Every structure is written in C-alpha cells, then in structure tokens.
Length: 227
Length: 80
Image 1: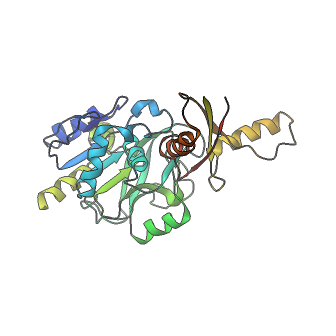
Image 2: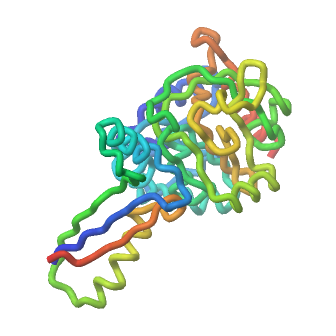
Image 3: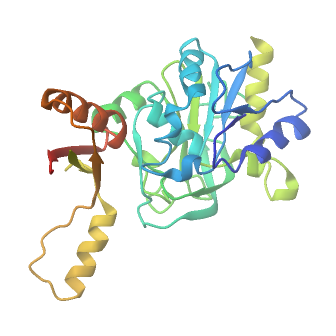
C-alpha cells in the first residue's frame, strides 16, 4: 500500500486486505526506494500532493514511482484506485488522461460498473457482463484518450470496467463523468496493471452496503496463488 | 529572467470549464463571445543563464511537468 502525502483511502484499503481478506500487507512511503518484494502494489485513492498541477502529476516523480515502473515492466501486479489510477496515467503505465467530470461536479455516489473482461488478474473471480455496485468519489474521472488509442485499447480488450445503469445497459446517462466509451477501469496490454475510478475498498463488506468490490481483491489473491 | 508558460487544452479536447465561462459571459450579455478556452499560466523566475539553455530546458520541463501532452499544449515566452 503506497502512501503519498494526501492519500486518504490507504487505511481503508489496508483494512480490507489485512483484516477482511487476511493478507499480509505493508505500507510503503512514497519516498522509499524499495518495494520490499511485495507481490502486488496498490496505489490508493486520495489527493496526492493536494492534486496540485493535475491529479497525480506530482506523485509520479516520487522515488518509489520510479521503482514501480520497473516492477510493472517485470509484470508485477499494480492496482491503482481513483487517485491511484490518475497516477498510473500520469506515469504512462496506462494510456490516456483524466479530464474534469463532464458536469464539473465532484461526484460521490454508488454506481454500477460492468465487467467487460474477466480474463485479467483483477477480475478472474467475475463473469463477463457481471454488474458490480461500487462507489465513486472524484472530480477528475472523465477518461480521455485520442481516437487511435481508444481503437487500440478496444482491440486489445484492455477495457475492464464500464459504467452501466442498474440493468446493465451502457448508456450516456450511466456515464456519470463523461468518460469515453463509459470507461471506468482499464489495464495495460500485459494485463498486470489496472486502474479504476470506483473504490472497491468501500464496497467490500455487507455493512457498507455492498461487497461487490471484493471480487477485485479476491481475484488478485487467486491469481497470485496460481502463479 | 522571467519566463511565462501558457498551458491549455488541445483543440481536440473538450474544455467544460471554458464552456461554462463562455455561457456565463453570454448570459451577462457579451453576445460577441464565440468561444472560451481555459488554461494555466506559470511564471518561472530563473538565474541569468544563456539563451540556448532556456531554449532547450523550458520546452522540456513544460512537456515533462507543466503540461500533460495527451490533453494539453503549451506556449512560452521570455517576459523579463
């Protein structure tokens, strides 16, 4: 669990991994120079460096992010949630960029996302077309990439989650933040890096209204057990 | 020396903030306004360094840090 100044979902995500899913979990400070042989790196949500300049723009220069580049290159698992997704985009580990939400509002709500690709280390416990109810909380979640990049990520099946309505329809209304192709989460070509705007850690206990988010963490665990 | 860098969205990228400002201006009666694009201004003070160093480094740092080349473009000038 990487901690930047301004991260605010690190403890929630740590709690889910350690206390709910009984995994070994450690915090890594962004100024560290080692990933300490972890199997999976999670970049949590929050406002790294206050989102100054652009969301995720300053965080990408942290010493630990240089280590993360190598880790991802060697096919280590990396999950970026919300601000973590924005950092992965700024780092260039995922294609595209985030614009301000289409209605210029900070959105904090439960949304439905549809699993487009269950053949990734992050979704192998899910089914194609399965709907997950997971909350979002962001200002800059309007995914943008130039048309040629969109063509490529569609062709390579890199789109993992899309915003849908409660019936699973991919509509413009369901596309709460204006993302191209309703993109809520995507992987790199090799499938070892996932960025997603919704917060699975906020939907991993029945007490919180949904435990659909567990699929992501449980998929990672299954993937690592099979490695 | 002082350098001004102007970062704005590429023409192909929708700028909802600029659109909102445009709508506000039209509502106020400034009916000649055709479009508004919003951007960021950076004023960078530097040591007195040779011009070629400025020419090399300013576009480099603008591309690497100040702008995200996927969605943004930049221009710059020496103002002092």
